[in-house]
Length: 264
Image 1: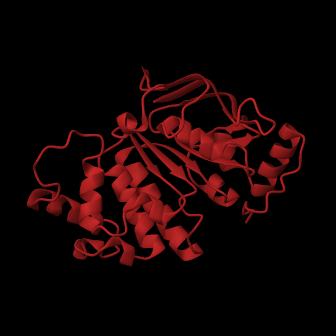
Image 2: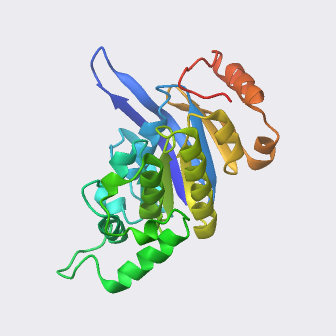
Image 3: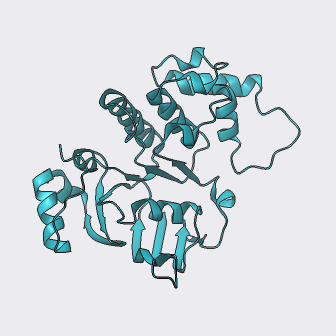
């Protein structure tokens, strides 16, 4: 589904502040893989997802989506195939627009826009049906501005927006980090349900090690721009947080001491 070969990205190249954010990354994800990604601050996790989605260009290497080279394609030309959600609920939704308008915008992502209305009776029915499955009552609030929703409701809506056009790949960049524990649990339940229902290939960055172990069939740990651990389903289901920290320390040669990461 997605293949990266030798992907490298530098920031502030040629200056004293030069940083290697991605260092010769090689990664393959099969169709339907749900990969959780964890690592200390500055490991390159978000840069990896931005490179895949086209938000930033890479300095070297190639990115293929279903064997099609998308390395040089701009973000808007990848948008139909890739759904993406940021950490901030306000970044993935337009607060001044209604729920229905946000969904219509997401539904038409990557398509040519004609003169017909983005919101129509047929689409309204579809949107209401999709929202009903969330169990949050949002199907009865289609005309409400998104800015009036809670953070958890906005991220739940963002998940629907990211998946409604049936993308080939879903990228989640710490999409529960800004939520309280109750809302985070709800959003993760919805995430799992949507990923499984649509068979979506998913890459999810998380700051929560228990979350990284609980969800998905594969776990990747990054450190200083490199993938230092790639753990499959069988090994992953038997790991504890302590095991994971021990593996990180043994592989990286440094202690895992990022205060942002939730160990329990």
